Length: 176
Image (cartoon, rainbow, N blue to C red; front, side):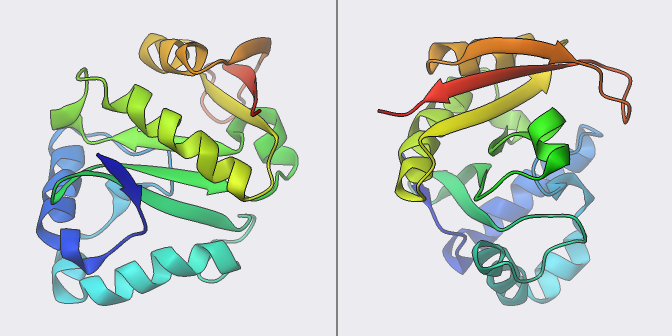
C-alpha cells in the first residue's frame, strides 16, 4: 500500500471509486471527487490526471484554492482513496479546512485505510516544508476524529462552520 501521484494506471479502479461515491450519494471532502462526471472521466482520463497533477503548481485550481499536492492511496493496482496536501493556508483553510484533506472510497471504509492514508500523508507534508499540520473534521465525524488523534493530532478548538451548520474540530499534528 502506498501514496502515489495520480496516474492513468489506476483509471478503471478510480472510476469504480467515483461510482461508489455517487451511488452512496456522498461527496469527497477533497476537491469534491463525488461531483466528477463519469462520462468525462471515461472520455479523457489523461486530461483529468494532468489537471490533478497540475494542482501542486497552482494550475487548474478553482478560485480561492491554494496549491495542493494530490496523492492516491493504492493497494496493488486498486485505487483506495485520495489525499490532498495544501501547501499553504488561506483564511478559509485556517478556520475550517486545514492542510490535509483525505477521503476513502465507500467500499473500502472501516478497514483501516483512513488511518493509513493520513499516516502516509504526514511525511509528504514534511517534504513540502510543513512542520505543523492543521487538520479539521466535522464534530459529528467520529471516525475521522479517531484517525486524526491516532496519528498524533491534538484538539485546539471547535469552531462554527457557517457553510454546513456543523461545527469543525481543529487539530494540530507536529511533524518531527
